[in-house]
Amino acid sequence: MSPLRQIILNTESKRAFSGRHPWILVTSIIEPASKPQVGEQVDLVNSENKWIGRGLYNPNSRIRVRLYTWDSEEHITKDLINTRLDRAIQLRSRLANGSHQQALRIVFSEADQLSGLVVDKYAEHLVIQVTAAALMPFLDTIVDRLFHHYRPLSISMQVDERTGKSEGMDAEHRFLVGSAPSEPVTIEENGLYWNVDIVGGQKTGTYLDQRENRLAAARWTQPGARVLDVCCYVGGFALNIAKHCETKEIIAVDSSDKALQSAKQHATLNQLENRITWEQADFFESLSSKLDAGKKFDTIVLDPPRLAGSREHLQRALSAYHRLNFLAVRMLNPGGTLVTCSCSGRVSRDDFRDMLRGVGTRTRREIQVLEERGAAPDHPSCMSCPETDYLKCIVARIL
Image (tube, rainbow, N blue to C red; front, side, top):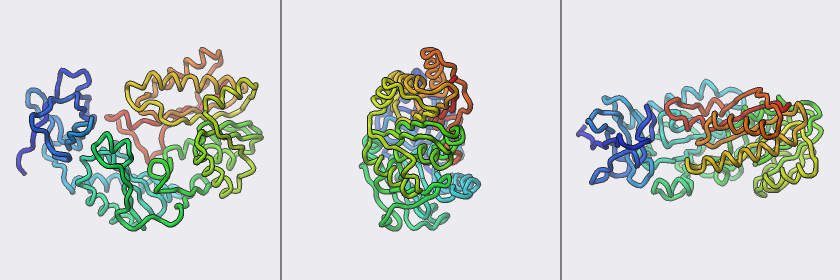
């Protein structure tokens, strides 16, 4: 193989490089006079020409280089991609038991050393989410390997609009194997049935990362509790609590009418339609109005959408989390359970704990942490890439 073009790390940059992090930002390198093509394999070196790692280049992305190997003898080939896929699938095969076999994250991007690739399995259908244009030349290899392992009815590939804009790709959703199912795909999770729209649903169809956390919320909800589920989306937490607990009341709030219609359908599908009251409202307005009305609850679940999409949004996001939890804590009865979540990768666990500590100080309530949870085990985190530890879920008792 001919020598690869070298990309020089800008060691004067404040955020040049950290350990084995796979993202090399445009601000972290000295741009070559002639930029490599999208997906071109390059070597990252320092100013003293010391080899650091090997990756794929994208001149259109803020993440200029995605590193895939730190072994100078290893090249980014079809064989390497297949080896990484096999390794990811081998882990999921250890997790695939019971209902987990029907819906599972097969590949989780940086956590599986396949930066820019997410693969989810819904029954007999696989959905690929590509978030790195540099990986597109390996798409056929990826599809062939997935088909070899699973023989699914369909494999579809999606690029969302936001990713397309940041990576220089067109947003699209197309089927690479088979065709779109005529009806939503039904899966079972925690004893509940869910209809997943793999074409028009959120992310690759639904959110799999909160699977165990939804069950934990039910486990910590006491019999006869009054429950409030804020940002309920299609009813994941509310329906798990209704399924596994004898509650006095469950109110589930979301701003999206489409999400609530889906939630109601899932309640009917699981014969829980009479257990939950659905409310369409902005979550801040809903909490504020309930607080003003003197409402009290025994369990409150907070699962807002991502509030910090970039480093610049961090402080604004923490302020929003503080306000949201402040309102919730004030409405919880003594000894009540707070299940509070953040899916913002930019918000660290320490940030989230500090925010909650501030809420306790301001409300003069003791917040007793019962569990600190993360994403389901098919969404592992990687120590060298903190962003993979994106999901925080704290279960606490409010004294």
